[in-house]
Length: 213
Image (cartoon, rainbow, N blue to C red; front, side, top):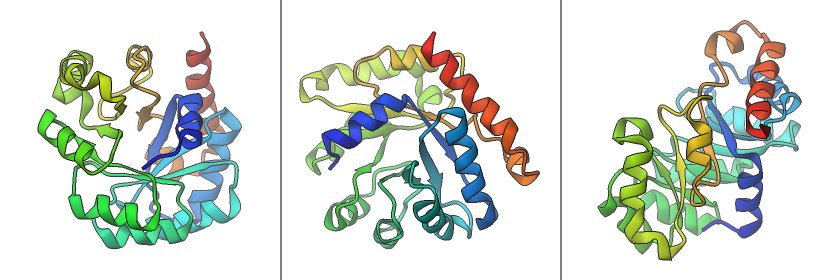
C-alpha cells in the first residue's frame, strides 16, 4: 500500500510535522515555513472544518511538501483526501473499511495500531506500514521492541506518534523499522494563530539540526 519511492522520502525526512489548521488561509504559509526550516513531510489532520480545503490549498500551492493527511476516520474521507491531492494518509486507529477505501483509490495508507492483534489485522489487509499510537502512553520504545519482535521477518515499518519529542525522537529513529516519527510538537497552535511563521521555521530548523548531529 506504499511504494518504495514514497517510503524513501519519508525515511529521508525522519520527522513528519503533524498539525491541524483552524483557518484555510494558514495552511500555505505554514507549510512554506516548515519547508524553509528543512521539514518537507507533513501530516495535516482532519480535526477541523478547514482540513479538507487546506489539503487542496497545500497540494496546489506548495508542491515541495510531501502531503500526508491524518485522522482519516471514514471511507468518504479517504476518497476525498485522495481527490484533494494527498500523497498518503494515516489514522489513529484501524478501521477495515477505511483501509479498503484507501486501497481502492490508490491512497498509500498507514492505519493506527496499538496491539499485536491490530497489527495482524493490518497485515491481513496488506499493510506493511503502520502508525503506532499513542506510542509513549503504550510504553514507548520498550513496548515497540517487544511487540514488533515476532513480526520482524515481515518487514513491518512503524510510524510512532504520541509523546514523541525532540529529546526522544533519536532513540526511536535508531530502530531500523522506524523510518520516521510524528512531530506534533513542532507546530504550536498559538504560533499559527498569530502568524509567527519565522518562529515555526526556527523550530523546524532546530529539529533538522538535531537529526544531523
